Image 1 (cartoon, one colour):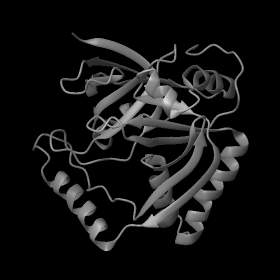
Image 2 (cartoon, helix red, strand yellow; image 1 turned 120 degrees about the vertical axis):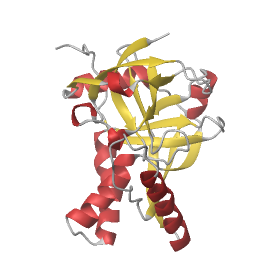
Image 3 (cartoon, helix red, strand yellow; image 1 turned 135 degrees about the vertical axis):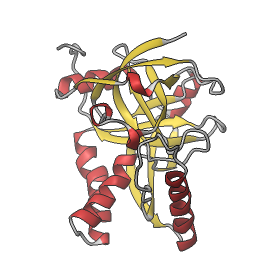
Image 4 (tube, helix red, strand yellow; image 1 turned 90 degrees about the vertical axis):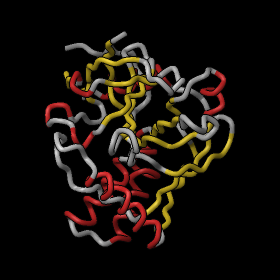
Length: 255
């Protein structure tokens, strides 16, 4: 049965090669009442321009229940139905939306049988490690293979160029410390953009990301989006990093 949802996008994870759906991006957003929806499979770099949504965009889409994914938030999205209807711009609206979905900790999300959650962390540390030459070569090979195997009627795209660093975030939530690898696409895309398009030195880019997350965003009100893995539900990943101020009541989805 085809269903419909309207969400504000908060999560766009880095592209991943997929045996079944070509290159895909795990995306997720919140309905007006704070209910999560995980959108999959989204072949983001193949979406038409008017469907290529960003964080804080309001989008409408049709979906069916996934065949193999038992997580209650997951939706099998019909890509052709995606429609961007607007964007949340006001600080108060963002604050209220986030407040509806905040949990104190990863464990609280698990106890509520959630597979996606928002938390406000403390004691944040951002770090990085360079991928080995073998790891980077293998990542590039996988994406090049995907790009070369697209069906003839699909739109041709250049092979995705993976970031040469693995980023990690160490933080505390209501139950204690965590260290997670960052799967947020915006983080890796910012590195590539500043390094290649603006010509910044590598070290300067890394320090910029560190200052942004650990100082600037923390002062504003840092929010982390986390989610578990379908095949390993006990493993939770860091899917999104963004600043949102504390809450005040406000209506959402008002034209």
